[in-house]
Image 1: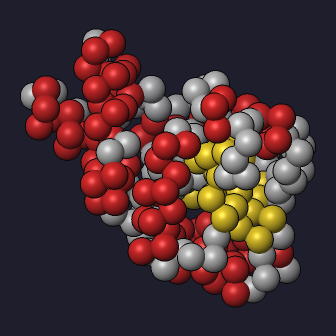
Image 2 (image 1 turned 45 degrees about the vertical axis):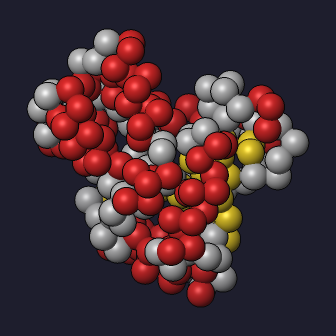
Length: 202
């Protein structure tokens, strides 16, 4: 199987870290469980200047490297690789975060997964020739059998794969609204994701 795995809030606890950063910097206390929107500016009620600062701060190397692993993520991904599945980490992080993101993966025992920065928001055009920076037209040429994703905003990037099985990692910002179709399954943890993939592969 070819498996797509999102990085932030699937492999690591990015939102929990952002909650701490916003509280420390701006005195805005929005606990993780109260983060109802994937849009961080809306979740934290930040003005444009505050939001821009948060995006810069959240992608600084020391901050990226400090994100904690989502329990069970590394063990599950490595199990998939051991079983012969192809795993690609597809992140919306800007390409200038690639090296640090790659370091996080390597440090956490995921040296055998590929990492791609998908240019979802037209911010990385100057990196177009990099093999690890994907424009949308390149991404749409890739084929996946299963995906692990937390963001409802990313679901539109699966529309070209009508048979794709999507495991939606349960987060506060994806608990409202309906999924696009019956191929989407809410998963409370990596063990339930592992079981879903095992059933699909059998």
